[in-house]
Length: 331
Image (cartoon, rainbow, N blue to C red; front, side, top):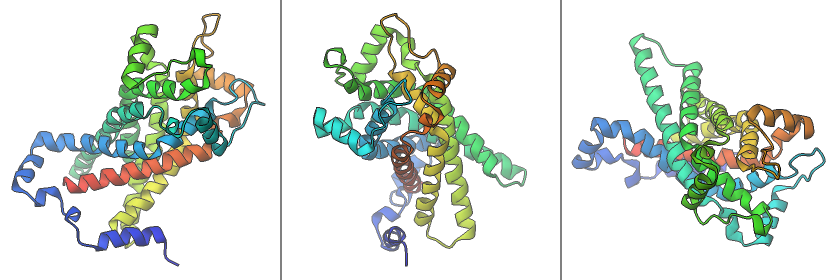
């Protein structure tokens, strides 16, 4: 039996459409603009940011549920183990269904900064590696793709940490007692109030695990996607969009597997606030790993893997598919 998803993609591929022609082939003015050196350099970043924002708009409720699951039962092995459905019901019961989109403005800003940078840098680094490899008569392999993905992820995460922190604060705010809630009205409000109350440096709280998480995620997502796409092109006769879809599914799985422990620690560090004694629960990434492993068990780092995968895999797939399509349109 044929795969329904592949049939749907193939049906799109087979039909004539104005969207099946690159923009540069439809207008001399557009072609002239796209072929400008500064435009060519900027396009990977623009396409990356747009694709990430589209994906975030689609999966924001899943991300909200994922964060709440990670924060449940903090500090004990026997704490609650809520299911994604139970968490979703609780969020809606405490407020309204639109609360599942809490932090959307921060999520979109994060994509506008983080995904713009990571996909832009990844393509820029990969293009540079290709040029050097071709000059030596060599083909790039998995190692080169992995290096490009890790470097792009780390740089982008450092730039995007303030928006990421604001997102976690907004999503975890509903877990506090009513009197203690910040009730941020937007990502700008969250960033401004956090900076005023805790200092500008607080916007980079959790930056170390954020960067490490991004490096692990990009290693899994971009390196495995790029390698899988290359292998599928060499070994199958599938249509290009089918190859992209399957390769992005591989990328989504490995991105989830490698990055979840760091995502867990990042969430804990960015959510934490000073206790009555004026001290933070965790002093840093290593301290958080140690305390969680001791007090809650090693498997706590992979709590919510199913929800995380459902959040990461579709996001990775939508991001990569949209980015590749935008790349085609602006080729």
